[in-house]
Amino acid sequence: MQRTVLKSSALGFFIVALFLIFDSRSEVVRATRVQAPQEKTVDQVGKNIKVLTGLPESQLIPVMNFFAASMGRRCNFCHVNNQGQWDYASDAKPEKAAAREMIKMVLDINKTTERLKLDPVSCYTCHRGRTSPQSIPMLPLPLPSPPPNGGAAGGPTPGASPQASPSPTPVLPSADEIFSKYAAALGGQASIDKLKSRTAKGTVTQANGNSFQFELTQAAPDKFYLLVTTPQGTVERGFNGQVGWEKTTRGVREITGAELITFKATNGLFTLLKLKEQYSKPPRVRKDKLGDRDVYIVDGTTNDNRRMRLYFDATSGLLLRRTTTMPTMVGIIPDQVDLEDYREAEGLKFPFTARAAGIEVGNPTSTRTFTEIKLNVPVDDAKFNMPPKPATP
Ligand code: HEC
Ligand code: HEC
Image 1 (cartoon, rainbow, N blue to C red):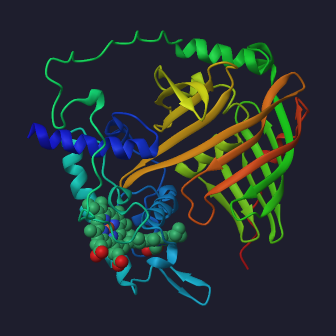
Image 2 (image 1 turned 45 degrees about the horizontal axis):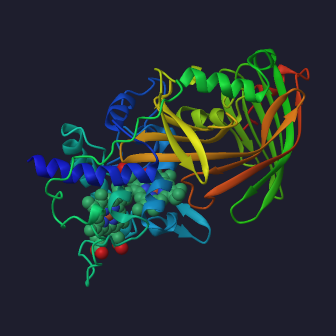
Image 3 (image 1 turned 60 degrees about the horizontal axis):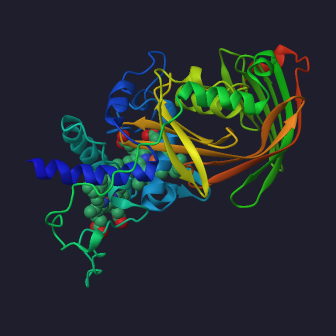
């Protein structure tokens, strides 16, 4: 029994390393099964939902992207596309039926991982970007790497001390000290507290090289308006403190749940400036490397029940990376942003480049490069409101 648990936790660690998160996530998963009461579930809004019952509506597309990413394919691996028209509700493809059986299997396996307090198993655990997981070891086996200290393989060296010359545990700063150093590196807590609004312009470049102009207007505490101009027309997104929305050439829609949390995390004025407040309890700190830089990693659960890891440069105190993960019933979905090119704009430092990476199969990365940042310019609050939906003809 003990042995099985150990083996499974080794597997757990592997998954964990992949998703850049470290412990007791099953707790997070359990916590987030309790959904905000107002959000509908996919079985209430979808046409043909048989197994993802209870999944919040806003998690459907992230989960579908997660399926595609796990299989190393796109949506059309499981869904019918008739001359450019998607029919997601159709059951014509056998792969969709196979995926339903797989979802049931994963939900079943995770009853066990939950009972054993292990990390949940997901499609990615087995598939790892391939339609056929490899279950049989490839022969010949690689030669095992030589055991450390020249000891005999298969056990500890007789007489060796359990741990050779234990190195002194490095003294770590507290999370509060890291946040204070960060605020100072940006230009001081007073300047951050004085910040009421920010307007910015720049370009956003997708993984396929397409590049668009954007304009971002943000106001305290969390209102924003984003305008992206593409050759197909403009895309607008906004949040007025209450209602999140998106307007495209196809119309206006309200944004809620997981999608709204993600939009706010990308576009809010203080999402990268006021960090301590976002954790639901004091986060843990450890030391690590990011590339060749020494970093302090601050890691904990956010008020939105996500996992957030922040990587601070140990020398400059600046934030270099933010990784968040969203637990869903079929897997943990990661999201990452790398911050570069810090420059001063009117007394505060901002990263002029933000490289985001996510689960979206068609668009795995997108980079925002700022060309202009202005602070405390008066803004008309009406900008953040959802535009009226055009009357349906
Ligand atoms: C590995 C197979 C697989 C892939 C890849 C996949 N899906 Fe799905 N999708 C399913 C299954 C299975 C269901 C039905 C779930 C159920 O019955 O509970 C579904 C349901 C849906 C639905 C709801 C349809 C309805 O009944 O109203 C939408 C929308 C959808 N998928 C979109 C997408 C998109 C967009 C992508 C690509 C990003 C995608 N899917 C990729 C397997 C897949
Ligand atoms: C415990 C391991 C495991 C997990 C977890 C798992 N799968 Fe699979 N899956 C398999 C195996 C094994 C096969 C059979 C592959 C073969 O026949 O070569 C398979 C086959 C499939 C197929 C059929 C592939 C084809 O070529 O037709 C689909 C679709 C699929 N899985 C989707 C999923 C989805 C979606 C999830 C997550 C909800 C998932 N799987 C989770 C092991 C797993």
